[in-house]
Length: 145
Image 1: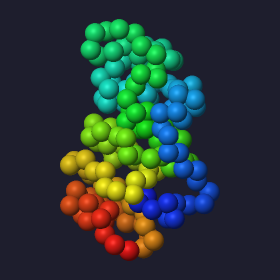
Image 2 (image 1 turned 180 degrees about the horizontal axis):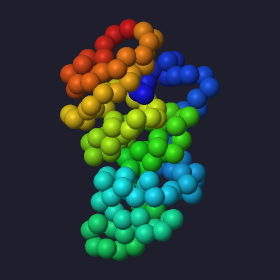
Image 3 (image 1 turned 135 degrees about the vertical axis):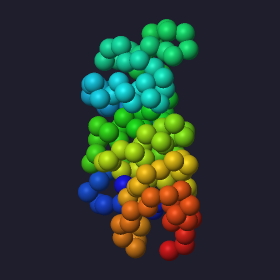
Image 4 (image 1 turned 90 degrees about the horizontal axis):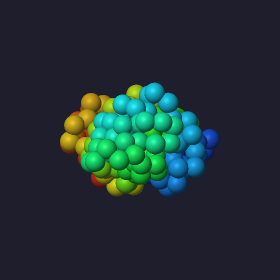
């Protein structure tokens, strides 16, 4: 679910602006098998233990905090479905994965859209809508309410 205005966010859901810090302090401790595919898909790294990844560049073992902020954002959304996360620091590779998740919530007050989307649920003061193409999503994001 995508929110483009903070006023449209449910009062019972917390908003997390700083994905990097939230991941390092909270999400990293929750990583399990489901994180392996996401880490490989977005950062090309291999999860080798709870807090270690193997770099795609030279095979060096790094601490998990070296993942990209986009990868951390997707993992935050996956593991904490009752929170809303800022998606402004996601690159296209993370956005492609994020927009294919079946659950989770994100926020940005400006358009952050990959060219390939299936369908996403968006929320505004007009209610919930499912949008299934780039142009319509961009129009929704840029529309005046």
